[in-house]
Every structure is written in structure tokens, then in C-alpha cells.
Image (tube, rainbow, N blue to C red; front, top):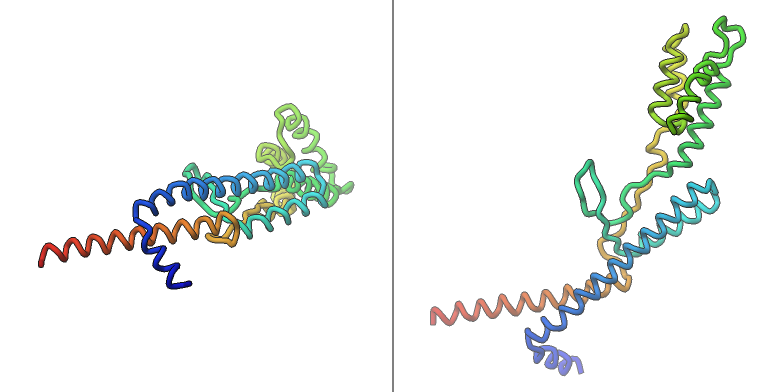
Amino acid sequence: MKKRGRIKFHKIKTWQLLLILIPLLFVGATLLRLDHVRMAELRNKVLAADEAENDDELNDAINQLKDFVFSHIVINVVDDNGEQKVTFGTGPFYLEHRYIRAANAALKEAEANLSDDSNPNGNVYAMASAVCQPQAIANGWSWDDANFINCMVSEINKYPAADELQDKIVASLPSTELYRREYNSPIWAPSLSGFMILITLIIIVVILWRLIVWIFLRLSLLFI
């Protein structure tokens, strides 16, 4: 039966393989597109949970996203410093609202640490906040916005020991890299799109092999 299968396969013409290849390419591209769309939906679910400030829902959404990306072929186009780059996976994204919550908590802790009734200038942090927070509200700055932080630092610099206070505030803010996420997918995975790509590649290899053999035979006939 194996021999019969090989004989039947050899009887398939190259042009017939080309006809088979065309719909396979279309189906494979469609399946890859569906995998990308599903990844985008799960990533948006993560961002929505982050915006809703629901940590349990956020962690569950992150796990769903990771499980899907790690088991499917996800081709994505991301912006890398103004240049479009093709990558496998989600591409980088940030848990912005979780970072803002952490930054606000750090700033409040810094405010408590900088409060000192014995300071002749009073609570320096509170005085700087009284100036900068109205500006932040008027201009739509978030509390981790560079404009807000620059305003705070500028106001604090007006008071004695400003360098020490500035260092404490900057040190209290968490790094944005802690809230950066990027999950990479495998180049090939045992999914529906993965098997479709595998079959397509096998047919392409067979067609190329037959083309090479045909060219070799034609060249051989020229020297006979």
C-alpha cells in the first residue's frame, strides 16, 4: 500500500501541485490572520482589565494571552523607533494603569517620608503638590507624566536640601520596564495554521525539487 501511495503521488503532475498550492496558501494566510486577530482580542482584554484596575481579572487575562501566544503562530508588525518590523508574538505593550497606581502609591509614600514639621520650610512635598497638582488637572497630566514630575522637581528645588529631596522622589518611582510586557510565539506550533503551513511547505519543496530535476535534465540533453 505504501508503494501504491508513492506511485500515485508521483503520477500527480507539477501543474496539479501548483493548483493545489494556490488554495493552500490562501487558507494558510487566513488561519494566520485569525490567530493574529485572536491575539489582538486577548491583548485588548488585558489592557481593558488593567484600565478597570481589576488585578484578578488582569492576571487571568494575561495567562490567557500567554497560553494562546505560546501555542500558536502569531505574526505581528510592530513599530520600532518609527520603523515597521515583523515579529512573532504580541510586540511590546505596557500595563499603564497598573504603573500609574504604583507610581501614585510611591509618590504618596515619598510625601509621607518628606513630611517634617521641624523643617522651617514646612512640608516641602505638600507645598510643591499644591502648585503642581492644579496644573496637572488643568493640562490633563497623569501623576507619572514627565511634565508633572518636572514641575514637582522644579518646585522642590526652590527649598533647602532640594537635591536630597529630588533624589528621594526619583528613587521612589518604579521603573516603567517592570510594567512592560511582550510575549513571543514560536516560529512553528502544532496548531491548525501550523499544520497547514507544513503541508504547504512540503508541496513547495516538491515543486522546487521537480523544477531543479527538470532543469538538470534539460541541461544534460544539451551535452549529449
